[in-house]
Image 1 (cartoon, rainbow, N blue to C red):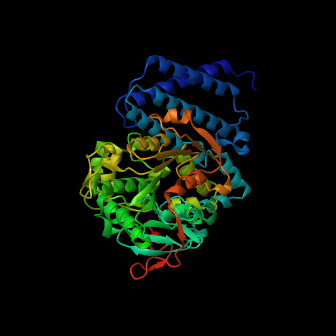
Image 2 (cartoon, rainbow, N blue to C red; image 1 turned 90 degrees about the vertical axis):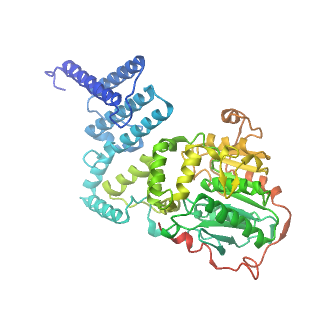
Image 3 (cartoon, rainbow, N blue to C red; image 1 turned 30 degrees about the horizontal axis):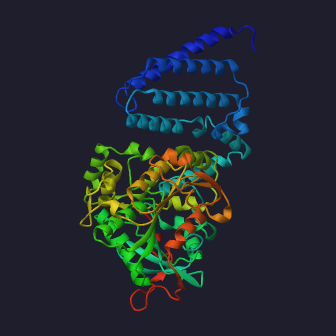
Amino acid sequence: MDSHVDWAAQARQFQQGVGQQWSQALQAFQQGATGFPALRFEPAKLMELQQAYVREASDLWNEGLGERKSGDKRFASDAWSRNPVAAFSAAVYLLNARTLLGLAEAADTDAKTKARLRFAVEQWMAASAPSNFMALNAEAQQKALETKGESIARGVQNLLADLQVGRVSMTDESAFEVGQNVASTEGAVVFENDLFQLIEYKPLTRQVYERPFLVVPPCINKFYILDLQPENSLIRYLVEQGHRTFVVSWRNPDASMEDKTWDDYVEDAAIRAISVVQDISGAKQINALGFCVGGTILGTALAVLAARKEKPVASATFLTAMLDFSDTGVLDVFVDEASVKMREMMMGTKGLLKGQELASTFSFLRPNDLVWNYVVGNYLKGESPPPFDLLYWNSDATNLPGPMYTWYLRNTYLENNLVKPGKLTVCGEKVDLSNVDIPVFFYGSREDHIVPVQAAYLSVKHLPGKKRFVMGASGHIAGVINPPAKNKRSYWTNDKLPENFDAWVAGAKEHAGSWWPDWASWLKPQAGKQIPAPKTYGRAGKYKAIEPAPGRYVKAKA
C-alpha cells in the first residue's frame, strides 16, 4: 500500500459519494421513478437504512480490493473471489440490492403497492447483476480464456438459436419426445371433442376399484407433468394402486377456439369428462382430482352439478389449487381493475392469450433461477443446458382462449367470486361451494410461489364434507411430483383443521418422504370394492380407442 496516499481522506470522499448516491436513490423512490405513486417513509427507518448503508459501504472501501467470498451462488466460484475487481463489484451490487429492498419494505403505503414495489425492485436487481454481463462476469471471462474464445462462439450460436424459437432454452429439448420418453404410460384416447381428449390407461393390476379415477390437470400447462417418467409418474402410481385411471388432455387452443368461455371448460370439458367416465365404466360415482387451475375448474363443475342435484363424484382431490383467491401471493401484483379491464377489451369476447406470455410471466416470478441463470450459462459461458424432463415440460407452452382467461382473471384473482354463494352463474346454475358435500383431500406445497400453501388451505373451509389437508415440502411442481421410491423431502399432517393456517402448522406432525402413500390410504376407502380389470379400452359399441396415448392434442405446439 502506498504510504503517501491519504486513505482517510479517500474514505471521507467515498462516504460523501455514498451519501449523495443514497439521496438520489431516495429521491427516485419518493418521486415514483419506477412508475409507482409518490412514496413516504418514516424518518427513523430511513435514518437506520442510511446509516447501515454508509457503514457497510465504508467497510467495503476499507477492505480494498482483497479476496472475498460471497454467499450468493451467482458469485460463489473461485473466479469471482480471485478477481478483486469482480469481487468488489459483486459486493457493492449485493449491498445496493439489500438497501433497495430495505427501502421498499420501509415505504409507508398499502400492502399491494408495497408488494408491487418489492417485485419491481427484485426484477431490476436480478436484471442488473454483474454476473449478467460479460465485461463484469469473472467466471465467463475465465472460461473464454481457457477455451481460447470457443465459449464465446458457442454462446453466440446459442443466442441465435434461441432467437429463432423466441425464448431462452432451459434444457436440451432434442432429448425428449412426447409419447416416447415422456408421457409414455400405456393407454388410449377413448373420447374427444373440441376442448379435450380423454385418455384411459391400461390397468397394471388384475383387479381395479369399482369407482374409476378422473384427473383434471391445469389447462395452462400440458397434462404430462403428471406422467414425465415411469419412476415419477403420478398417473402410473394411480394405475399401480389399482385405480382405473382417466386423464383429461386439453387441446392447445388455436384460432378456432378463441371464443371459448369458462362455461365451455366447465360444461363441455370437466362435466363431460365425468359423464363419459361414468358411461364407460358403468359406475354411478367416480373419484376425481384437480391440479392447479384444473382444481378450480373441477370445483366449479362440482358446484354446478350440486346445483342440479347431481352427485356423480364420490370424492375430490385438490393439488395446489385455489377455490378461495383472497390470498394469491406474488401473482397479485399483476392483477387490478385497470389491468383486467385492458385484458377484457383486448380478448374478452374473442382472442387468444399466447402460451409464451404465460410461460414468461411464471419464469419471471423466479428470475434468477428461471431466466438469468440460463442467460449466463447459455450465452456468456457458451454452455448447453442438460436434459431435464421437468424443464422440457415447462417450455412446452399452451395458449388460452381470451374469454375464458378474462373471466377467470376477474372472477377469481380480482373479485374472488367463486366463494361467494350465489354470486356467480356458471352453465346456467348459481354457484355455491357449500353444496359440494363430499370427502375432499387438499394438498399444498410449503414453498409454492404460484399457489401459496396458506391460500390452498383457505379453500378447506368452503366445502362442508369430511376433509383432509396435507402440506408437502418444496414448490408448486417439485412438491407434487415426489414419488415414494425417491424417499425425498417431507410432508406434514394435522387431523384438526383450525380456521387459521398458522394454527394448523403449529399442530402439524412432520413425516419423512412422499405424501403420496398418505393420499393413497385416504383414497382407498373412497374407491369402493375391487372388480376384475377391464381387458379393453373404452366401452364396446360406444367408446372405441381412437389412438394410442398420449394422443395428438398434447403434441400440438403453441
